[in-house]
Image (cartoon, rainbow, N blue to C red; front, side, top):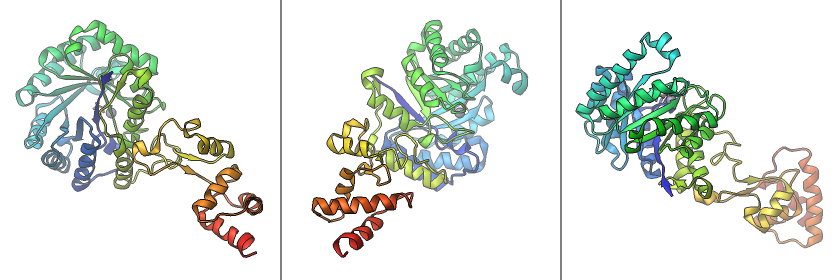
Length: 385
Ligand code: KIV
Ligand code: ZN
């Protein structure tokens, strides 16, 4: 069984979600929770982006002891100097330096040739190694880079001292098979990747960030990058809770797992949602309000008989109290009776039948049936009436 390291960028790429701004205190609060969750690396920010971000990285670095704290930097000395300043007091620090490698970025953004990009990448990693033992190099837009050139860059930065090489799908353009192929190719073309961490970093523009991350793991990635609740630039990043649960639930298939304390997932998700203002959709995998809720009578009956009929993850394993049987027009008698017992009613079968018939009439009028609705219904129809 392989252990996949988790690199959390909620506080950097996650903060790049339009409309999100996380204060220093909030970043510290989230970072401490990420430490409890057991993430290996926390990217606390981009120190050179603003004085506020430099302060946040420094505060997080001071407070978190068990996770490595990372700052992003462009491949320019001033950015790396600012990151070094911010990370001075970290127990464990890492610099994350990035440079785009794809033809589109080389031509339109950087106006640099392949040779210039290669030289700058090596120069940046060499400079970073003066300050840091752990240096991550990201080939921005790697997924749209010619594989031969990407392999050349990867080999060169490893030679210069990079301890992690990240292969981002910056614009979420890949399909799982294509993205996995890049990792297989790099493993084959650059034998030195055996000696470093090979990282994946996926965006969700086509809704494939988690699937692509898992494909990378299958093809040899040893680190997965992402954010809590999948927040991030544009459509967001790979949702780490989904990656972790996919690996855990299907470790029979992936033969890989993470060291996360899964029971902290619900709390982490709720904290990130509250402090960023990014609401978690009800149907979101693993952490959505409906992820462990059953509405249809057939499903409710199955779950009451044997929970694994319709649940592949136990809600308790990710920190939720229990699953929920939601009463609505698809619900059956079995779940309705369970609800009555939970509310303190032990009715005879004919009373249950009468209440159930009244409940079904109410369901056609209301979208959601609350406990108060049931109480009112039983009190008026049954006990008192
Ligand atoms: O998506 C991306 O390419 C990034 C890099 C800075 C790693 O976030
Ligand atoms: Zn990104």
